[in-house]
Image (cartoon, rainbow, N blue to C red; front, side, top):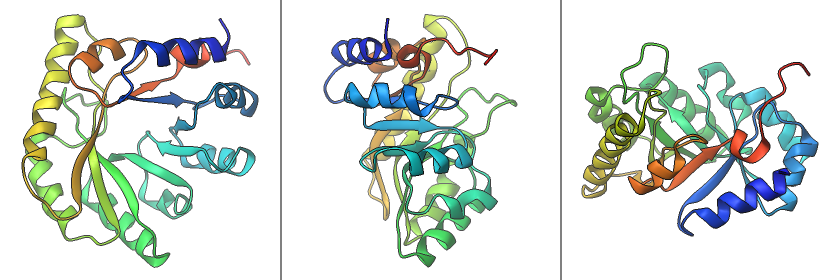
Length: 220
């Protein structure tokens, strides 16, 4: 199936209030334009340099999401380009976001990334660190937390549901509380292989790469 057909099929398959983020990392401008022409306006990139290059080449009404690990020395390149940063994973990164975005009188919209499976190979804060990062976020003026993000361990349906359900519980718990600079609007969980389960467990944003663009050709 074409990229357009893939995108439209997933869109038909999900509730209207769930955002379909087309993960365009490593994809060409031509491939992204095919999804764009099908109606996609929200695209996710892993690397700041790749996002910046595509930002210059593609239509300006695209909302770019940075979904990969963000190094502090790259933050300055995102100001005025990024719609939502999914990977706030430390207080040091938070401080750099505050510094760079405030210097340009801009606001960084972010999701706190939780390493829900406590995997050593993945970034994200532990659940135990959540209160500390929330307290630090409340002291900021140029960083606004819009929700939470997680990438869960690979596993079967039961395992996926456990992690998704845990994320939803944390999300709803924070939603009931009142904070400065923090609103729980986005729960970014679910990818190509498990997005249906994620939506059943409460996801508001799914990150779909191969499901939209097809399998990657690593020989290119």
